[in-house]
Image 1 (cartoon, helix red, strand yellow):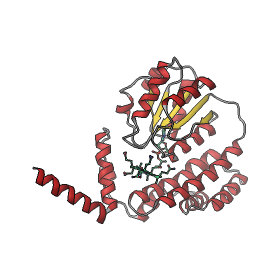
Image 2: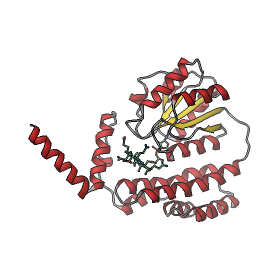
Image 3: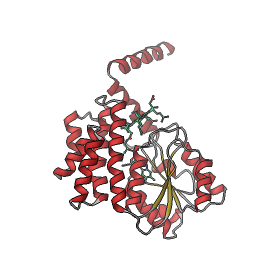
Image 4: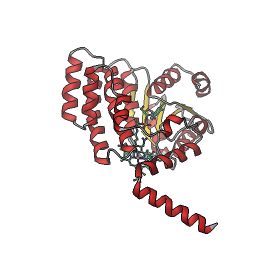
Length: 277
Ligand code: B12
């Protein structure tokens, strides 16, 4: 048995060296299965670079050009194109969801397949943030629908999804305090107390850090704070979030908007959880 395991470990290491894309995919699928996700046949199939680009490519030509500039990690060009689109009357929220987001999603999938690398992801993220900043400035000060905060769980540095969620919440009229990434439960609770927050959005992408969301929801409750925790990110599932109180699972940034709207209109986390799923 020990011999078989040694051979298996050797084969796995060999696969990691020879075919990192396949190795990454298998590891990710194993983790998703452990987290309780049902894997569709689609997620198991390997798409080509062109198929991935086509999957996310916006239909609107102006949006497609912006998405391409995000993929290229060209912040100057993104800023230039987004500024022109806003001047032509394009909706800032639509620009975030239909032009900037598809670009970063394409790059993240290419990275997963070994067709893009860390510096490229960071450049694309920076380019996307340049566009988001302009869209937020365009929206200006609008009467706030509620006071929120967003953070990434302790130990986790993945903040691309959180940045998108913050942008969409702000675009929908919420005031959002961005607490950043690698944030402890105690820091979140202190911010909630100090700012009278109505809801908090927590994200995480790693199975090793998802417990940070549980700790945060529990700490908020223990400290008698009213704000519930909306939880999302690729490492988080509805099954996991429903193992603890004071929390609501959401999949997309629009779920975060739905949750915030209900919570800020006075609904309890239990009612919001029931209504959403
Ligand atoms: C980009 C990326 C990185 C970048 C991060 C840059 C940055 N500033 O964020 C870099 C290169 C730095 C990186 C580093 C690492 N990474 Co990484 N990374 C990725 C990658 C390719 C994409 C993640 C991403 O940004 N997705 C796109 C965003 C938009 O999606 P999202 O965050 O899920 O958010 C969306 C939704 O979930 C939702 N959402 C998000 N939050 C919320 C909140 C609420 C309330 C709601 C309702 C919705 C919601 O809305 C968002 C928009 O649609 C993934 C693989 C993948 N394809 O997912 C691996 C991945 C997440 N990384 C992984 C790992 C292991 C690491 C490292 C440990 C690698 C290493 N050995 O060094 C380090 C981590 C260091 C650390 N301590 O955090 C693993 C995690 C495995 C696991 N399940 O635990 C993954 C899955 C890769 C893999 N297949 O193994 N990574």
